[in-house]
Length: 263
Image 1 (cartoon, rainbow, N blue to C red):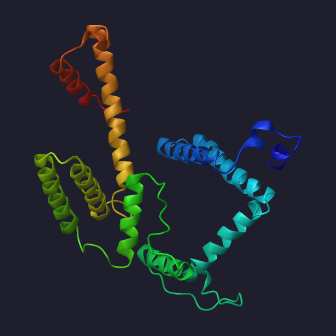
Image 2: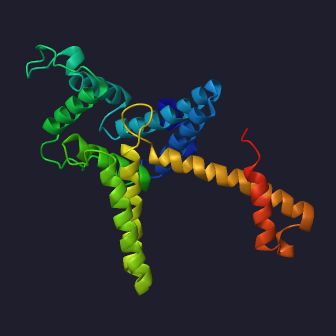
Image 3: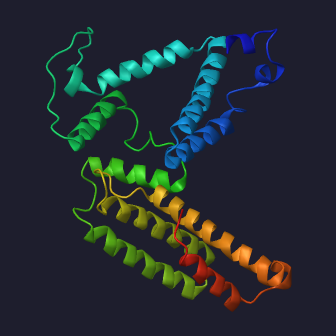
């Protein structure tokens, strides 16, 4: 990367800034997720490399400005991992020595210790300030709910968020009946947020409930797969959508698609 950013290096690379590279960071992170879900180890290895490139790229630009470099990024995360795992390394004192290890009998206790240590390190910031606003809305909503839950601000069981969904749907119905556009938007957002909180409380593998983002992504994938069948049938029977097949015809093709087992 240093060679690429040197005066005799790559003109395109040398023109980049942290801001111009933001979209690549997001794209590569999304491609890593796709690779994980594909189950293809070779693909995952490649995509992790692409994401790592973005980390190194950003850090090398910062190094050239005199801020920090790739080594500082690695040292920083190593230091954080040690601080946030006192049940493994022990509590680190200000002089750099380590004391006794704290108790953590299960994953939930590890997360509570992590949040407690994080709160100490970032005492001047609110508990939710560390959740990036640029996250996809469903991911951000779930992270906000998880963080609030770790300090006890949460329903004790699934009945609470399930009732909240019904409450928010009723408020949305009122806004729709009034024809109040801004209220509809607000209440619809409340419905989404309530559904994410319900997802956190539903039983799933692990301790974090259902991943709302992953659940919706799978549903969109399912819709996309089924609609592709509808498109194919419309081409076969009508020559394409330009012939304006009826909704009843398209519903029939959709029902066919639902009977096709996924790959």
